[in-house]
Structure formats: C-alpha cells, structure tokens
Length: 134
Image 1: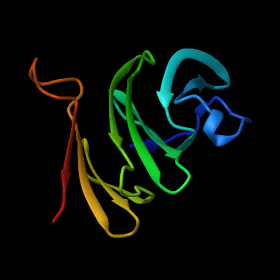
Image 2: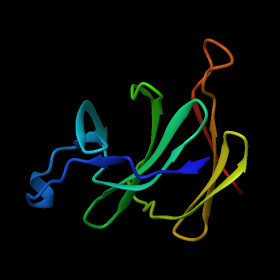
Image 3: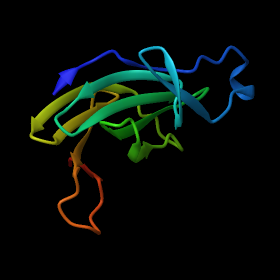
Image 4: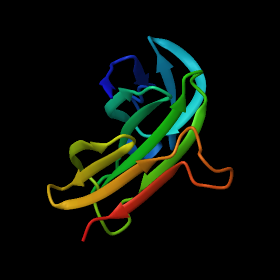
C-alpha cells in the first residue's frame, strides 16, 4: 500500500447549498469522465491491483466519507458511502490490518473494518465489505 498524490477533485466555488452532489476526478491534473461523491480527497493509495481513495463530503453539520475503488485503467470498480444522516463520519485514522483489509476510525472512536475483494475472487461477491467493530 503506497500513499500517492496523483488524484484530485473538481473545485466548487459556489455556496455549499449550490454545489453538485458529485465532483469530477482528475489524474495528474487531467480531467477524467468519472464523477464521484465528495469534495476533498482525505487519503489515496496505490495497491497492486487497484487505487483506493477516501473522500469526504462535508455537510453543514455532519461529515460523510466515500470509499472509492478504481482499477489500474482508472475505471470505477466500487464505492461505499458512510452517510452522515444523524451521525458524522469524520475520518480521524486509517490503518492497514492485512492484505486488502483496513481499519477506518471516525470521530476518534467509531471503528470499521474495510475489506476490498478486487480482483473479485467469486463472480457474485461484493468488492467492498464493511463491518463495524464492537
């Protein structure tokens, strides 16, 4: 897992309530056709088979987090939203637990296990699996 800084997002200069729900993704400054939920890239990593992006989309009183998986051809493979309805998901820490398995910590105490199944080992299996630590 290598931290990178090749991806960026379209900047929105309008008021929060006028912003679109998705932003264009840029690679090395070049605009792609991909639109993703989020306004800021918190973390980005390159792995052997995919790119992992952790985005935030700040609501007025709540914070959300979007997990984005891209293949090496910069095609969208999967997304997962930690939606802020009645909760806030401010990413405070991120750790690699094992190969393709990560820990996300929100608000310094809510812990989730994120498992990436890509390339998929079984046809009908999910690419992203999330489990809350209790």
